[in-house]
Length: 95
Image (tube, rainbow, N blue to C red; front, side, top):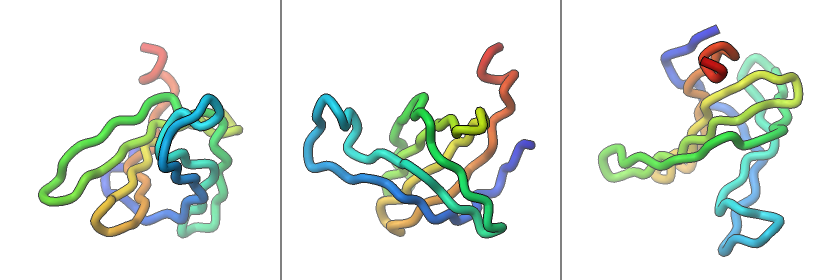
C-alpha cells in the first residue's frame, strides 16, 4: 500500500549524544504506533538520510518491521514530531 501524505505517528526511539558499537546512529527508532492503533516493532533500520526542508532538518529512516513490512518514517527536528511518509512495497526494495 503506497501512501503519499505523511501521517503523524508516535515513536519510541533512543537519542544518543555519541555513537557506540551498540548504538550506531544518533537517533534509532524502536517501535511506532499509528493513529489507527497499529503497533510496529522495528527489526532493522535499512537506511537513514537527512534532508533540509526550509529551516528544519528531516531525518528519514527506511525501516523493516518484525512482520517484514517496510516503511519510510521521518523525524522533523523543528516540529519535534514523527511522520510515516509511506509504506514501501517489498518488490520495490528487491528490484
